[in-house]
Image (cartoon, rainbow, N blue to C red; front, side, top):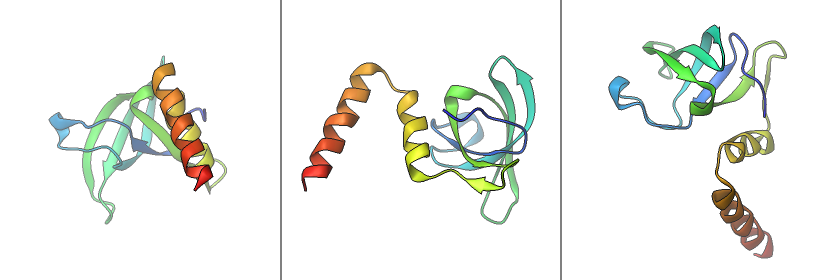
Length: 103
């Protein structure tokens, strides 16, 4: 899994109803509090701030690395999501991937 750093772009893995935010919304890490806790500024497609949220690393995946100025590949993003799943769910993903491969 890619370790989050300041200014990386992240994508939510969970809904945040208190902030009216849904899975898949994106933002940037603006503060690293340590112990896997971050302040994230979530924005709309026009770059307008929707919310500043304290998040735990397990609530999002990194999709763009600021230092490298590079988007993570789809494979890296899928691997990051899978890393957050239980073993049972990981087996389900593997079974589904096998199903897709056979098509």
